[in-house]
Amino acid sequence: MTVRSITRSAFIASLAGASVFALAPAAHAARNADAEQYVQTHAAEALGALANRNVSSTQRQRTFNQLMARFADMPRIAAYVLGRYGAQLRANQALRSEWTETFQAYAIAVYEDQLDDYSGGSLRVTGSIERTAGRDVIVLSEMTPRGQSRPLRVQWRVLRSGNIWKVVDVSLLIEGSEIWLAQQQQRDFLAQLDRNNGDIEALMVRVRQQTAAMRQRILARS
Image (cartoon, rainbow, N blue to C red; front, side, top):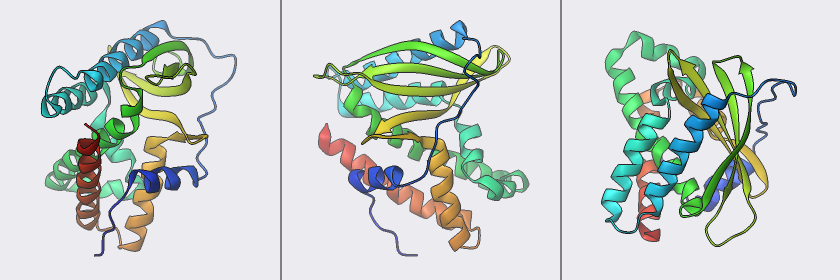
């Protein structure tokens, strides 16, 4: 299978060209202070890790990876982005583990690549909207990139299981378009799986190469 290197500009262009719309909860829905605090604390911590130039790039990446793996529900997102093809994971434990690990490395690289512009800047949670009371919440925030005064809107969808919140999707404004990353990833992966007869192993080859390309780009900026 021929795999093309994915540049940052190509990634942004593919997102901006897609018809991706924000989730639309009811305007009267209540706020959730607990979810807001979760995002404020953990998102700020992750951005702080990216901005820490007192450690090596390797240590900075390792810390960010650890924070994002705790902040986001990677197994849930990994299953979601496969859509109907995710049924294969339920029947094959080894494939599920391999895909989850592969996707987590990719997703964290995407977060690092896209959020790097915000590192060293400020994050302020401005509100939240409950989609399902106490369980499914859109947290609204503003992130101001370093060296800029104009904040950009970032939305975080968080789900609660027991007493634990986890991020399951993030909406960023990229070149004027609002993009929910997990939704766009599902679209991209489904398109590839439709073309390759649902071969998740082949998809993993491509995803690993995309991850490697992003890592090279991130390293070049360090």
